Image (cartoon, rainbow, N blue to C red; front, side):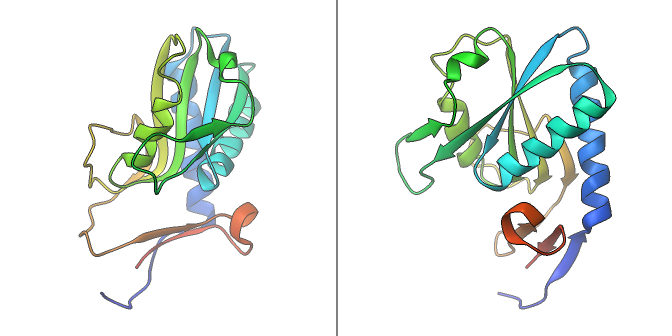
Length: 170
């Protein structure tokens, strides 16, 4: 594995990508009065918080935020939320994470909502690596990045990691 660390998104670029995705979410849901952003803990939730702030700056759309915590090492769905998932009933849900790699995390995140009737579900990620093992794709992404399997993408978000926001290819 290479020890080379390549900056793929800096703080300003992450902010611009967040704003662009917020506009895309608004356009995709222009007839809605409210939407639900479901952030996958930890960085996906922080990214969802940022999207919520950006949407509220540009529209009057009501945005509900739910955090979903997953056991990513489990071979079965083990998810819990910080608020009752009934808040998503009959609404548009956007599942949010920082990086989409194999699709497993987003698939597990979706699984938490299988028994809740939804208007529609979409996915939003900061970076889509396109190494999908599951039939999960990003509806909205800040950056689609072709990488080799040995490479790794690391996202640093100030709220989780301290320091400046950045995304690195390792």
